[in-house]
Image (cartoon, rainbow, N blue to C red; front, side, top):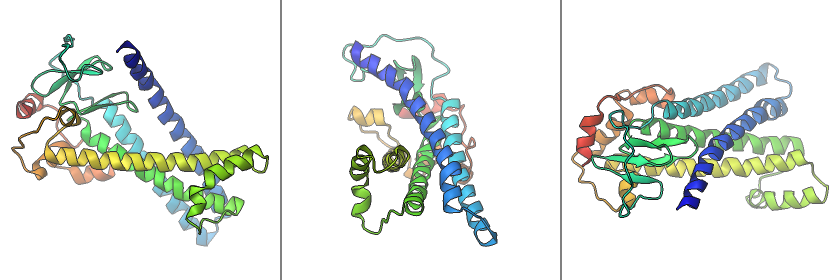
Length: 277
């Protein structure tokens, strides 16, 4: 138990640092390599395309980082409970959290009582619950879009700079092992191998975020949390899926799709807790 908690606490520190480094590297690659190489001399005909690509990337990154910050700024912790409970030996969540009543958990990593806890996100370093679920879902959506957009520009950069053709679908599947072999043979540079690695990093993060986002939206529509699903607890849903989505995304959900702004009220904690149990 102690060893596993130590690993979780270490992951809680490493994951945000990894996200920060990956974000900084993506910024540098876009503005120092991809855009200058793909559009070397932006004349009148290419200036609009260059501006469009830069605007699209900045929009995606702004929303991804904005919702990331909002997820941390509006934590799911309960403001009415500060006592640290003792985990029962019979608690099914005794590894990282202790289940209380009325839709509350005590997270051992956050050391706080969490309102309607869904899971602990290591990339944000805090728990995801009803208060910040909307920002977390939008963070996953825009992170996935940013990674896929970076993947497309990365492929375009390799095509322009190194004359790599991706017409054959097997080219991308074999690109990493082939590039690794060429690197140790001294045929390609470390920068080219690093760019190939980043392509797979963007692809992996983009697919994981997209899949995780779909799962969270389905749980929200059912009025269920990840903790409840792990315990095998079936929620008697008293509200239709539209009401459940509105409860998380708020009445101004359209505005929340394009801007990382607050669209839900955070003062209805006690009322919602009664709905949970």
